[in-house]
Every structure is written in C-alpha cells, then in structure tokens.
Amino acid sequence: MDDFTSLFSEFDVLGAFWTNIQLTFFAAIFALVVGTVLAVMRISPVPSLRWAGSTYVTLIRNTPLTVIIVFCVLGLWGQLGITLSSDFQRNFFWLSVLGLTVYHAAFVCEALRSGVNTVPVGQAEAARAIGLDFAASARLIILPQAFRGAVAPLGNVLIALTKNSTVAAAGSVAETSGLLRTMIENRPDLILAIFFIFAFGFVLIVVPIGLATTSLSRRLAVAR
Image (tube, rainbow, N blue to C red; front, side, top):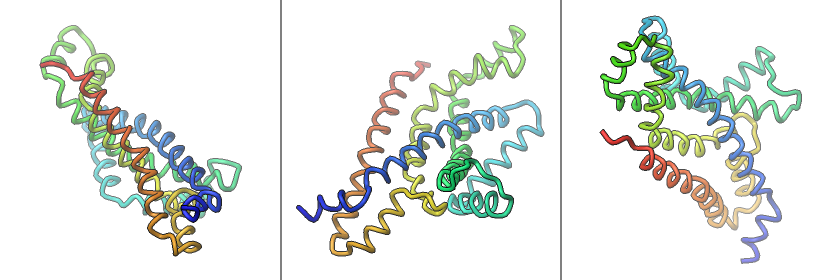
C-alpha cells in the first residue's frame, strides 16, 4: 500500500489529469463552434457550401488524430513558425487543442446532422412559409431542435474527446499518457498499480459525462 501511495508523491498524477481535463474543455468548446458551422454548411441550400462541409468531414474523419496533432506541431509550428502562445510549453498545449478541435469538429458536425434528421420536414416548410430565409430558419427553428435531438451523440463525442486527449503526448504535452510512460520506466515493479491509477482516473472522468448526457437527453427529448 505504501508503494502505491508513494506513486502520487513521486509523480504529478493529478497535474497530468488536470492537463487532460483542460485539453478536453477547450477543445470541446472550439469543436462545438466549428462543428455547428460545418453542420449548417452541410444542410445549406448552397451547393458549394455543402461540398466544402462534406469534404472537410470526409477528409478529417478518416485522418488519424495522431497525424493531425503531429502536423500542428511539426507543420504549423516547426515549418511555418505559427505560434499560439509566447510560452514555449503552452504553445504545444494550444497546438494540441487545435488538433483536437479540428479532428472532433467533424464528429460534432455529424452528431448535429443526426439531430437535424429528427426535425420534422414540416418545421422547415412552415419556416419558409412565414418568410424566414435559410439562416433564420436554421438559427430559430432547425438548430435548437437539432441540439435537443443530438445530446446523446454529442455526449459520445465528448467522451471520445476526453480519451483522445491522451494523444496530445505526440505534441509534447505533459499529460497522462506521457506520465504513464515515465512511471512505467521508473517503477516497473508497480506496473499493475500504475495501470490501475490511470484506468480508474479516466473512469472517474468519463462516467459522469455519460450519466449527465444520458439524463439530459431524456429531459430534452421531444415527444413526436
């Protein structure tokens, strides 16, 4: 037991998990914004916007997340000199947030599109009948109902984002997967305890998200 508790004094386990929570928090907000814009583009009456949204989703959704984060670090920062923070380590953090945002925005878009499919066609027809253009119809009629119908899929995207935040280690961010490797290298005698700590830690983070989104989706469900 003493060896197990000593892991918390030897290594900054809580700090690593806090970094993952921050990565998830910021990437979730930005991905929701970008994903909503993409969803509007995909249901737009303008063919070029639908094509652009569809191309983004197809390209990004089929690209490994590790490749995107490595590109953000080595391509944007290493080759193009793009920095998102004057702090050296913080710059890697924000570049990883950018990579997570770009990747998960495609899945947010698809989750919202599934919510749009739950909106009766008559709602959109009624909006046009009272003179609303596409932008007003999407903002006032379609998207509010789409969000209500997409709570559960969006929750699944958030859970995936939480676990995928460990890929930020590829961008030199000191989070859990990097610390896991360090702890195994330094304390191979406690490898089972180390795996238990990280598995249990992510369960503690992810399970409340699943319960909250499931409860919210039931409360916001629209009776048809």
